[in-house]
Image 1: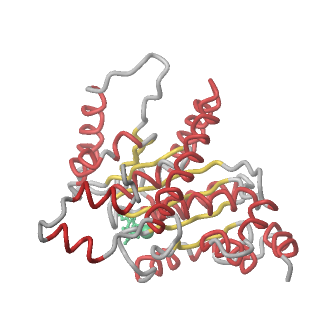
Image 2 (image 1 turned 30 degrees about the vertical axis):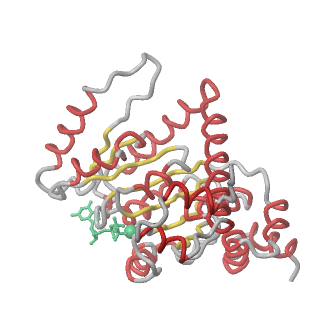
Length: 306
Ligand SMILES: Nc1nc2c(ncn2[C@@H]2O[C@H](COP(=O)(O)OP(=O)(O)OP(=O)(O)O)[C@@H](O)[C@H]2O)c(=O)[nH]1
Ligand SMILES: [Mg+2]
């Protein structure tokens, strides 16, 4: 089947066609350039969902899918787990939790395998988002596990990033440490049916009151949800829409997208450099045993004789 035919099928909601195209852009196979050219110029809302394992991301994503489908939007999800080398159990769990949408052609869910991507995970995810946009999805959700550097990078791809917290997980402080708090546009306190939710909301608000903001700067709302019952989901959808409106003003969205593109190029350049300038084992040995210093070794790797 030609790339053009596959794209046409994918636009009509064919999952196998969509999967084939995603694989092509993720692995940068021979077809990747043609796929990218044929699917350029989409316009989706990109929503990042991040938070510690088990906080309820997938359950909430499923509820969000439901809300957006009701509004007639096509929704795609990329689930990324940077901490796990295999797309195993967690993702299988996601599939089960999102099974409600398994037969809906307006929904596409994919786990992003975490290894062996040229250009790194962030670049791979970014390329996937762009493809899904180009295939006509109105919303692309990127779910990432945890609160580390990879999440920060991946969250930076999103127009709007949700940071999920839950009572009793003690991840407030962890989130602050990892700098995830800064990248969040909307805080979600999930599992609001559990004791301690209001304390988490209070802590977040106290923390935010310490941050100085310009008058027109975005102030992150805090939304309480009970994901598996859909509680608070309408409020969350409204908060995401409000953030989108905020981005639309003053050209912020265009700036964000340029930054996203620049980050993807950067990641690909970095990965290409790593491949081009491999460190020879004997040189590493020489540095390890003190015969050569690391700066000199780096100059040699770069072929920098000056
Ligand atoms: N009580 C309560 N439980 C919830 C809520 N939302 C999700 N859960 C439960 O929390 C568990 C984890 O939910 P997931 O949606 O898989 O969490 P996740 O953040 O996607 O987990 P990972 O993908 O493994 O990081 C499941 O057993 C859910 O049923 C909620 O609002 N209240
Ligand atoms: Mg999950």
